[in-house]
Image 1 (cartoon, helix red, strand yellow):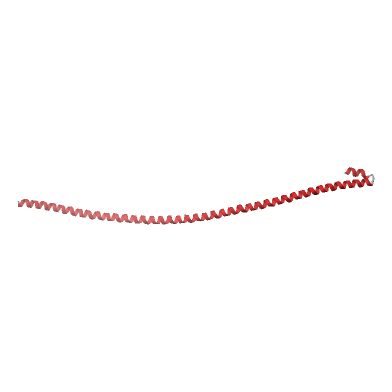
Image 2: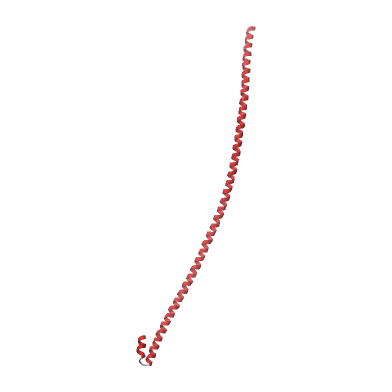
Length: 156
């Protein structure tokens, strides 16, 4: 095209006009091609932006959904933790009560054992005294018997 203009400059104005018209037509054609290419790229850009916005929106929705699930799980775990803490406190209280009752029963057992030992000692002492008394009585009776037998023999 530039070669046509250079050769047509020196020649006649008609040729120049034709060369200019041809250059204009070619430039117009290139302009339309560039406009179509620009429109195509603009449409592609718009479509890409739209897809990007939709993907971002989907991603945000997914993040929110995940966040909601995690929050629900966290709340459930917190409730479970509180319930376990209540159970542990209840178990500890029962354990303390059981230990207190055991200590009380142990003291009562020791008291009863002491009391039983004292009563046994009292009964043993009493029985020994009674046994000693009975042995003395037996000796007396034995002696009395011998005396009676001796007296009986003398009377016969």
